[in-house]
Length: 94
Image 1 (cartoon, one colour):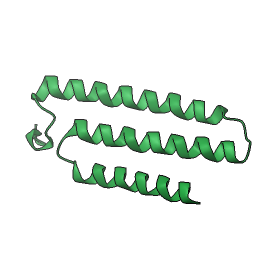
Image 2 (cartoon, rainbow, N blue to C red):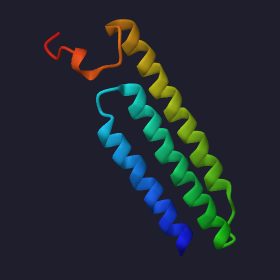
Image 3 (spheres, rainbow, N blue to C red):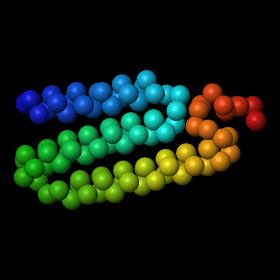
Image 4 (cartoon, one colour):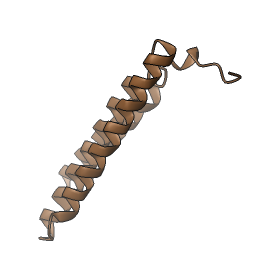
């Protein structure tokens, strides 16, 4: 029971960090990866607790790697086109 509370606290601290660091895309991507990593550990320990197969955790971690690669490519293309990862440099009317 205590481990569940620790995981929930770590998850919500990642969500809070995601909400507070909304000006930089890189910091948002890092906090999203932190949240995904906590979710992976929660799923893994849940599957171990009930002695299920851990194949779903491998699918989850491979999809999270694909998500992080997509975020990094968006970050690189954003920095090449606008010069920084600040959200206030965007012009919506362009």
